[in-house]
Amino acid sequence: MNVRNRNGCLVVAAVAGAVATLAALRARAPRLLIEETESPHGFETTTERFEAAVEAAGWQILTVHDLQAKLDRHGYDVERTTVYEICAPEHASRILSGDAERLVSPMMPCRVSIYEHGDGHTSLARMNTGLVAALFGGVIRRTIGDASAESEAMIEATLDPHADPQAAVDR
Image (tube, rainbow, N blue to C red; front, side, top):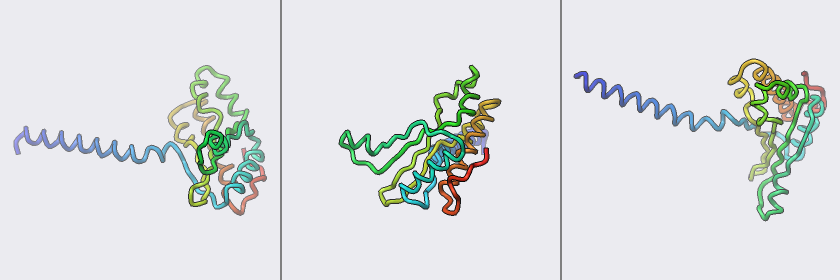
């Protein structure tokens, strides 16, 4: 094989490898950024348990968006979907106190969506804040990392049929 053919093969292989990598990333990226977990409970029980877990962890529910009701008023029929905006003032103050840290304020407050699938199953979805935290350093990484661990503990308490969601979640 001459040098020209070998170089051509290398270029083709590099382009094919890059295309395959981009295709794999595109297919996986949504699942990397958003985490979805199926609940063993129905919609009402899941929302009740989540609210209890948030309260037990010392976090606050700032807003509850009933998207089904909001869209119904506009003539759209969708499955039950409730989005919770939750906040731990301790974490929020660490982010909002510094000029450099306010960069991530568009991600505040934390959001968790509880929704019902067409087949009746219920799921929880949230941003993969652990992954996001890994992209930053310093106060942002520590704060988002702490908030991520605490919110995941609340979700685990919500989903675990043997756990008492009203029991305090370690902070």
